Length: 479
Image 1: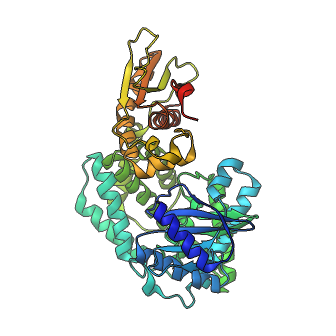
Image 2: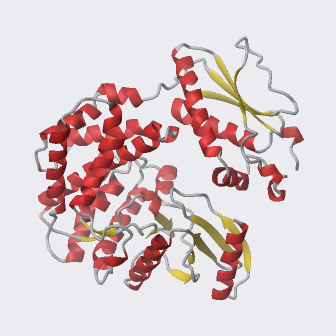
Image 3: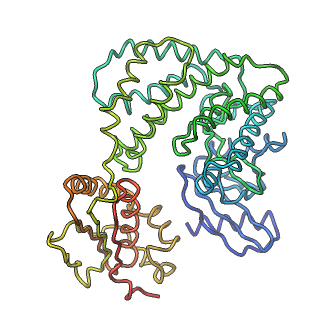
């Protein structure tokens, strides 16, 4: 990492005479790219490091094109010779999803969603003019094959994992029919492809877009569906309907012609369905196949979204075999299978989570249960070996980043979650009063502390259970 930071400094120094005060690594996103904030006396910049050169080239090329068209995207200031590092405009730390989660469903947040859709229409139409689609990472356009790929992703990673019987050939026939229907759209412009609230930055009440390097040409409705039906945002139904009409109003203004709204809405609904199923496929792959607990907990909300959609919307085409399969997915049996038991105010269970140093011994369980889980963290690379982390703890951001990005900690914790969740679920159902979970490492300062905090957050989010969190060696931490 230090060599990357040095390369970033060298690149910046060739671009600007401003003195660098700090280069701070930012939290890892869902991609393989690494982001850094360069802080100077009067300004700041974002440096991006990525080994996927084709992806970097696409983002740089797309950004230059969009900025020249006056669109809401960051400016690229400089790029190194290998195109593995580029420095761009700093749009801040606040995304649209951050604004929603901190502010709630207020008029201010609705205004930002509306503005995001207005800027999206600008990006789609104006960005399409003169765009070089040969620079796209994968396909140049989102057509029948791409739609089929999303549908098959859902089939393989979610539907088939349910192990329920269905007519496979009739389902594929319906997939083909839906793909043909949606690919014959009247409008084809630039498609963002991953247009969701975490890729929309909010700065000075204006919105800006990032992470559009996966874009291609396609139906404008796809991006609108992606934003309005993002599971994490869980927008109210009336917001979805009003924002769709707001978008169509802006789209009509830009293309300077009226839109057949019934056809537009029906195709929009078709893309909503595609996005809902793509999300289920992703949750199934990450949760059911890779056993990542966070994604398993997201499945019930995605199924509820699908249930509401099927009960209230039409896509304008009859797909009987497909409909039968979807009704199977939203059955009470399947939804209950993925819905975790949650504690109530009357639930007596308290989960005690300890970090400790093996030098001082395993914490004693003072209840009558005789202990619980003890996890040995010493197989994880110790941040305490490095001078910059010795006087920090698992509570500090830089240590967290190190453990998440440079060690096997995420894999270790996924295993812990799978094991512990079984007991917590059972203890809640049986009205047990206590469960102890211990994480030990050499000094009880870095790895065990981080693991305790992560497990506590996981159990609160998934089970709403009461937590007693103790760092038993805190008085001996190096400071």
